[in-house]
Image (cartoon, one colour):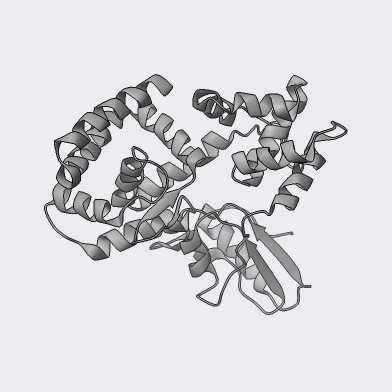
Length: 298
């Protein structure tokens, strides 16, 4: 680009911004990938101030965080990639399985089991090819939750990326978990808490009770913000009666993360406390059994 070098990094970023904004340049397109941390880019002194803006240039920003998308587009709307259809998922699997013959029903079952998440489907195809097994064999492995978590931790390569940069789905999600905890403390706590429940239709009243019991106050605004962060990262989705649901696969990885962080015991205790408030002593017996079951799956 023939931009003068030297000085602080911030000066270099500002020079690049000014160079791209100069009117005599030809049209350009800048792609900024993985803009996921809201505070890093849009907090005080955030990096977004170095994003060039001019009539002859375009920015394409990718993010897992809906709140970042809203800030980046200044509320004018953004393109959200919807969940894959069954046929799209099958085509993706076929493309990465190569010449391996697979039954349509098995491909559909695998896509459903992996919740139509593209990165996980590509990882599954890589494992199937590398180990010379069939899709049906892989489905058999997925019947065990421990196997599923281990498979999500498998490294794999994806087309178009640096081959030295191996990726594992579980690690990608764990990065998101840490980003959530840094961005909003309560959101991190709620994510940890709901990972101890069934993954579907988690009552919104339980979350209200958690804030009331742990923080000794009712703060609906903070709760809305915290749940908003979880929704922004597509970790949870809205369910009936102001409740939330989360991907089962994400929940399995989250439970592993809680063990690794050494905080699973405290959130199991909080879950038992909430169940006791709602259902009485019989809930305690249920959660003791649940606690043992989670430890066994570890």
